[in-house]
Image (cartoon, rainbow, N blue to C red):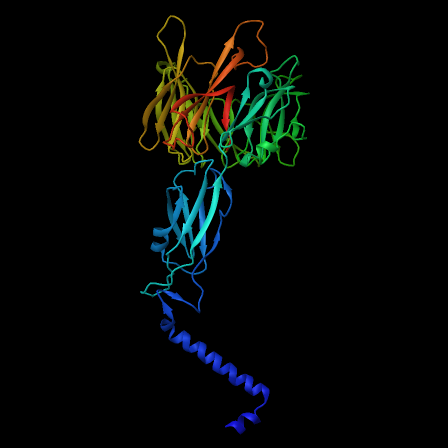
Length: 499
């Protein structure tokens, strides 16, 4: 035998060695259970999470679900049982192959850091009844955006300027320069910048604004008015800007403009990202609102509501007669709330009716009021509606009493929440995570010596304003150390939560 080995060539020796090695490996694979203990095998890798789409990400209310991708099929029950999120977030599991999605019931509360972990979950093979190998422990983190809101200041150096308050960091910053008086504003997606109308102080008509954008920093402490972050988008040279809306995707601005020299030249204009400002054909009408799909425009036209395409100049998509105002769309865009002023019914001419309308043609009356319906907003999951209403008081003078109301859209239950002071141009905003409502209390004056900078929609001079918070969802006091209904330490008007 020794003589035979001496006669072998080096390549023959290598072949024999490889045969022995591969034979050993095959023996392990065939009798592998002998080399495993407690479902752990030294010669094969453990199951693991290959990808987590929220890894170290900052998410917002638009982020509905996270996805875990495994490197092999897993036992569903063991994964669902052992997945831990801290702080907890309620949701539902759904599986597609090696991927599991966890869809949140409601948006994750803002201003929080979350830890996610998974261990003791096992793999699953087809037709295998025995428990598979236990996975490699998985840990990761993600966080939500800071809780923050913006408002228009009413005092001293803040008068008429846009103010940002980061609640999470407890920091406040003035966003706009002192020479501009801001009248209204909207946020771009993910709070990258703000679109607002502003007029120059000292001009003859402060109600004749221009349209601007202002960039926002990732960190509030990095913001400086000295930076070149203010951009004029649309001037007021030939046309007066009356109103505007921003599409949810931030790519389209719709403006309502009036020609200064031709009063009959009145209608909507569209400004697409990277395009020139162009008029929308046959767009003379009243109130308008861009739908959540960023492709459809709702506009009051004649004796009803018209739905128009934004990107294609075609005929009306739909027309809903009798509705004189559209208040808001649900977050998913499948429904909206509208007002019927009952102009066709003499017996109900002083009654305003609130309707919920969906894309399947259902029109459901929610309530009637003998005053006004000033505004409604859906909560983030679209199951509740918060409305600012007024009721007509039985007094010698015409007076309306405003109050906040919650409407459960699943059972149509109407719950009055809060009676407010005398109505004077109240604006309110619901937080993107549904935690509470911000609203203002405007103070007006007829004193001719008052600074004529800010005015209500009815033309009254605004001399002060307070901001209030109404908490709509149960929360940890450490998140917001406020009672259910409380005044905030800010003087301002027209508050809006950042998205």
